[in-house]
Each structure stands twice: as structure tokens, then as C-alpha cells.
Length: 141
Image 1 (cartoon, helix red, strand yellow):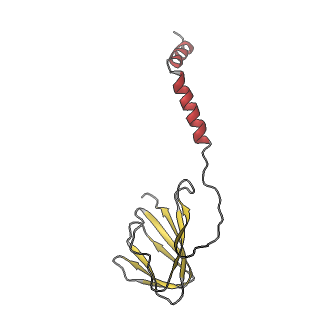
Image 2 (cartoon, rainbow, N blue to C red):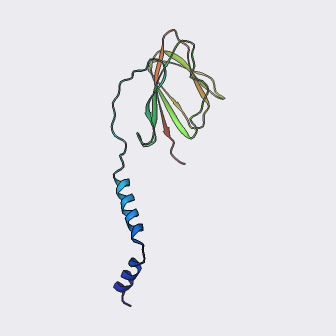
């Protein structure tokens, strides 16, 4: 049997519905919407207002705008395998990081929190504390 005849014989054994399913699936995946550029106002009446919610809106990053009243905290939490950065826009506060001394900050400021780090943010000032957080997957080592 020639090479061409063997190819035709093996191709004819594949059910037509498998080929159809594969071609439709490939078409749908290739047309799936990906992350798109975005601009939005930092409008948040209070608390934590999401800006980016992760996939499929982004490639994996999440973000939000936080407004804390004087004396308020966001509560102890961790971002798991993700790293987090905070951009302090207004006010003053403290970053409470498990096992470390508290870090005081005042706007404008930037904070970085490594993956797997339990932490809390508190407003230690007399004005509203406002910041944007960005949580992104950490690179595998």
C-alpha cells in the first residue's frame, strides 16, 4: 500500500462528527474575547469596590479601590499564592503584617505584600484612607 493510500485509509477511519466537533471548538476558542483595555473612574461610596475581577476581564490580575473610615480596618487576610501592591492615594494608616512590626504610611505611598503573607490594613488617621490594591499571580520559581 502506498503512503498516500495509507493516509487516506487512516483519515477515513476518523468519524466525521469528531472532525466537525474539533473544527467548531477550534473556531470558538480562537474567537473567544480576551482582556481589553479599560479606563474607569475611582468612584466608591465606601468599603471595597472591585475595579478588575480577574479572568476573563484580565489575564489573572484583580484590583479594587478601598475607602476606610478613621479607625477602620480591612480585616486580616491573605492573597494566597498571589502578590499584592497598594497605592495609597489619600490619608494615613498602618500595614499590619503577621510576624513583623507594623509599617506606618501616609499618602502618597506604595506598599508591597509578598505571596502567602497574612496582613491587614488600618486607617490610623483622622481622614478617610483611600487606596488602590492590585493582586496578581506570582511567578513560579
